[in-house]
Amino acid sequence: MRRLMRKWILSFSIFFSIAAICCTTIKAQADPADLSETEERAAKVQESLKSCLTPEAYELAQELGLTDHLTRLQYLKEHESHKRGTPPLSQESLSLRLETVEVLLTTALQCQAVVAQIEAETVGNFEIKSALEGRRDNATKTNAIANVVANGFLSSVGNLLQMPFENAPDARSQFPGEITESAGTLMATGLGGLALHQNRGMALSAPIEPNMLAKVFKRPNDSKTEYPDIIWTYLNSAPPGAKKDGPTRRELLIRRWADLGRLPSPATQKGRLYQRVIAGTMPQTRAVTIGMLDDRIAMLADLRAEVNQIYKELLNMMLVVRAL
Image (cartoon, rainbow, N blue to C red; front, side, top):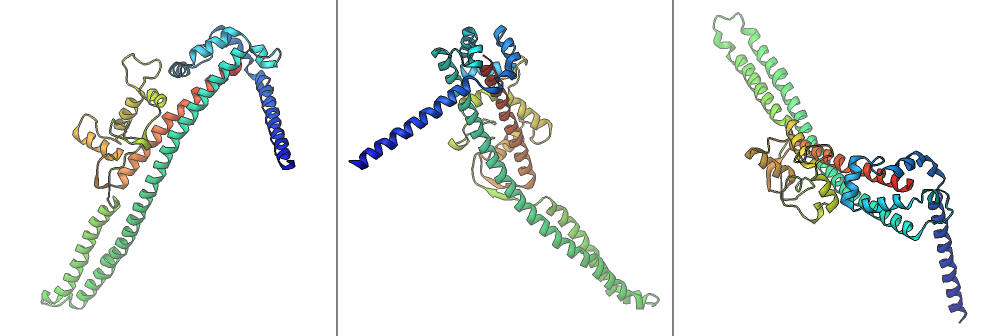
């Protein structure tokens, strides 16, 4: 019985401790010390919601279904209550703020999940590239040593063999030296050609393994490389201010890669085939090279930068919520 009582007492203690922490947190949210920094934003947002949201943030708010929430908070005009904590915020205002912050936080975590997958793929490609570069450097080093032997040792031996017979009436006695020197020259030429080939690095094969570029190129992907709806909608929408039927962010990325020479023209068969190789949606028979990995890493970096832009717009919306 005493043990049961102790458990009940401990449970109530924990419950009241958590309740006290929650109350303190709510109070801190209702009257944050640094909320005074948003006074100018608060004055603007009371006049016009769009004046405090960037065009990108307003477009994203529409996609997230938050424009009605923000408009309603603007209409309630509880900025002073939110700033000072007195009188308390209305139940409607608290509910709207909670729902808005929940959506913004969920979207931020979805962005982070996509960025994390892109970074994991980037690191994996860097490791393969480093391994290929290591093999290339070892082969180049071996080739350089052989080149020294060909150019230096064999040529020197050939000259030495010719020296005693330079003034001999019969030139045939110089043949051994000339043959040795010619062999060194031919060997050096062959090694030079081999060095040029080795400079491109080895080529590996890889099975089908879609990456985060697969869906960008409209290639089949899997659950690991799927995009959340809001991020995919963002990538497939045109930037604000562009023409109504202008290129989307995704199309602008592909166009940029083609302009930079990382991708052959998507309108050609070569371009479409290279897209499949870059996206990992086809068996790659000796197609994984240092050059291809460089292109894939650069494209993943550009894609990550585009997704990261969403964070700026989420922050913009969060600041507006704090100012309302």
